[in-house]
Length: 187
Image (cartoon, rainbow, N blue to C red):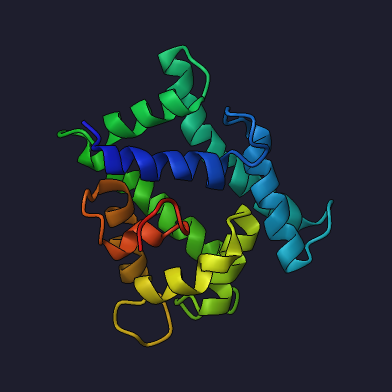
């Protein structure tokens, strides 16, 4: 069962990161909007191969969630989203979580490691905040918290640790809590 802290963070992920039109329901257009923001960042024009690849990858993320919500017979609202994570993080479903996290980490690195050096710089991390429409004012602080070795880059291992802490930890002081920016009255 999700702790209250996990619910707060996952609700933030739903409301701020994924529900781009802020209507309380996840839909394909929310994920398409994320893809379009990436295309603007990279200056990919509609109709080009790169544009279509990014939009397809974004909507593929939607289809992962959509399958679950269709099986549950409900819409992808915040309550059902929390149930999705409660299910995924339940004992015995570790393989589902790890598969989803692997997809998420690959997607973040493919999308924001612009120079393809296998690390995310502070500027690339700030781009992520802009593309997801997360308030950018906290991106530098979040980056510092996630850059555990202080080398001014976030590696895949550091990102994996942050993702695990964000979704699984009930420790209010976990650096991974800042993965998607400021989500509560915590430092």
